[in-house]
Image (cartoon, rainbow, N blue to C red):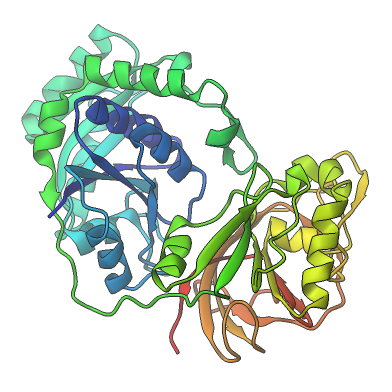
Length: 431
């Protein structure tokens, strides 16, 4: 059974992605098969994991996924070592669920804690002590320091860790060359980072030169896998055309894998290359991504748009998530205020001219049958975008609430066989 560990921080921006990618690539270069995972509903970091390891990375989300589904995803991807990157701070969840610590407790994987120690000395040990003792069901196996200013800075921190008995696996200095470029939804996508391989090798070199890789590897433990049902999302069709390019890249890998396991065939196509969905597809899926950055190209993609209209006219089930939902609408106004006409299959009109953050888990019940399932089905997802709704006029698709049970405005839309939501589907909910 695969031994694993979780790399976590005390807050977002502490350096856990930097450390995670460096560890993954450095251990892979040692000849180990490294299986990556990501805690929570992230679709950007997993693409970097895949580049670092050569293996697809899968999301493990204790808010949206049953223990059985998480166990199934871990069990189906054996490797010499599994490394899961945490989300936000170690104990940060929502509604009492979804924290990195919850995944550590479920799988019994130890935590490697990443601490940003800029401007700190002994306080770092105090923070680590608090994290190590906060929950009895979470074990911190060691600490990696980030943004250490100098050897003297490190010498002022090390004695405190010796006193508390928590192992220091190593320390990374502050180096701008290790920082990955970012944009409004997180890191610039892996497929857009042209020098990604050299960046990953640079991270691996830094980690291998300053962190005890053998100690990190030895700290991994076999996962405890709960023997409960793995509730899966049924595929929306037998032959599913899935948009896939720089504008449509936010697709959770476990969904595609589950659909293939259920016997469905995935037919990728690129709207940016003006490709239409396969004419013999019985379902079309437009994931989220960055359509607003490519709105002019998508507006000019006539074969793509006509292919969507032909599919809808043939009663083919079509669903769009977030960016894909916007593309099914009437138009997108970009950040500069320019409007670009979209497919026109839904009444939705969106704008990025005035950005407004929409963020959070979503629990939704379907008002009618669509690509997401039968009427009355509950689905769980996550919403994260900056678009504003200018207008919409179709029939609502879902009744939707947030992680705390409060109703939210997100209702999606449907017209005939076409549907869309701002949230990205993560898993099936209760029947």
